[in-house]
Length: 430
Ligand code: 4AD
Ligand code: MG
Image (cartoon, rainbow, N blue to C red):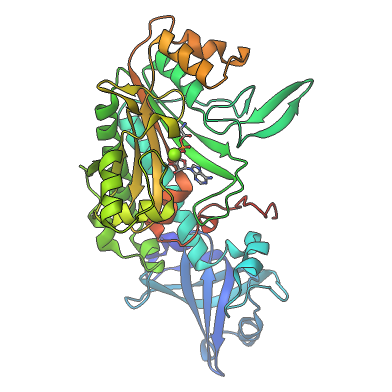
């Protein structure tokens, strides 16, 4: 019977066949241990010379790393192994022999591994990260469906920018100019006026010359947008959302998090409500922590975010930033003209900003004024202004960066490991 490694546990004492690759092998004169993987998991196959036909023993002994196989054997319970089972091999058929697989069990440098990303993905650690990424996406969709959000897909080719013009990828759209989307937000605002609560999930592009462990050129963002939802209500939804994702991953990806050596107690603690600190208080906190040169009005860099996060044992919202350092569409604070109704959610342990969000300006005249201040007279935005002209309502939304969230939950040092094929400042291959 043909099955997969993930299902072996329900075939104890039965003989089954799996399609697999050999990830590693140890053998002596009498016994060979085959480390097998099939995408669903990893399992050890044991070949005992005295118990198999001679040609099978010879094949097993000669197997090279990443050779593809059909392996038949009897499933045996084994409490010492991570998967709980072992396969006592009775037959091995080579599908395709791999010769000189470049990624050996020894240590390799990062650049080498990145050049071989198409193969590196097969390793146990990368496999675990991709499984967690998948579960994060799944649990996000689950949360939004449970809460009656409708998924809407904004365009990727756009005629204008959402966040500012400096980080746009330009391309030609026949005779017109077009840009790759840096956020679907403006379109999601239109969608919220049609469908109430909406979310999108898709790739976004930032032509940013940043070379940090938190920046990708192409990354995936989840962008909810909610009609009739004000700033504070939006924060409550965000903390519920992030708690749901983290607790679900903890429950469903224990094995992967263990493979990754993640400190689970840190994640167990991630439950709503999350602390909030105003930008003003964050400046004071930073000054108390010895950041003497930060002044009110400046944006926070990675060291600042890390220092603020260290004061809390959960993700923390930094609210009400100065309007000068935030996007044009953010609603001013009702009692203060110098700050806006926004929040960034900073992950613990130095992973930085994972969410940026705000209440949006809903007043047509104010939005028009902001347009002029930002030199956005472009006809390409006419439709966005019309959202404020026909039944405008208070609304809020946010964007969560998937890769930074995966990095935080898996404990990965750098976002390059959290996306299958990272696009980085100096990397477009493979
Ligand atoms: O803070 P950002 O730029 O917000 C927006 O784009 C809003 N329009 C979202 C919205 O309100 N609908 O980006 C949101 C998140 C950040 O918090 C971060 O997690 C991630 O996207 N992000 C990046 N991730 C990887 N590489 C980059 N270069 C990123 N830039 C932003
Ligand atoms: Mg931001």
